Length: 185
Image 1 (cartoon, rainbow, N blue to C red):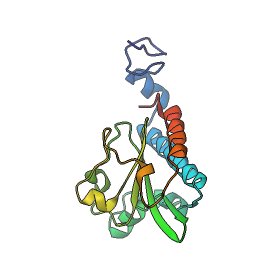
Image 2: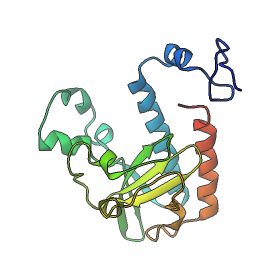
Image 3: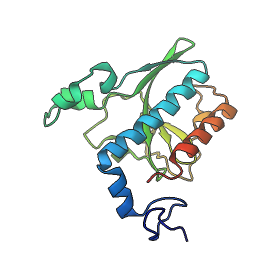
């Protein structure tokens, strides 16, 4: 049974922290989530660059710097659409794609996660899910049809016809994800 590296209490993570020590060390869970998202986005960004795509950061943090604080408490379609801007636009062989990157320890991404603010406005976006073990992908249209990403599904990024990707390179980037996320809650 693994023990917390700080206090010795039970934890489910080898060389990890128990819940109490994790919260003491990491503070605000929103900040922790933000950092995990940035790492996942960087892994996907570098993966697509390695595959020969031009990659452009697109999300609200990049397209409209400083707007995050201004949108606090603001409701309406415009603020919702800005918040839901995909993270990346990738381009290769005269094809462009919106890419929304998510990190989930659970390995699960469902339509309800995507549509939590109402219908997702970027109908042609692709959702790339980075987990501790895999990088998977589904389109928004597929999610609307009822498909989901879960730990046992075979929605591998390397199987996407849009990318004709190098599966060995994707496996290499999965190793980066494992390295960065193996002890992360």
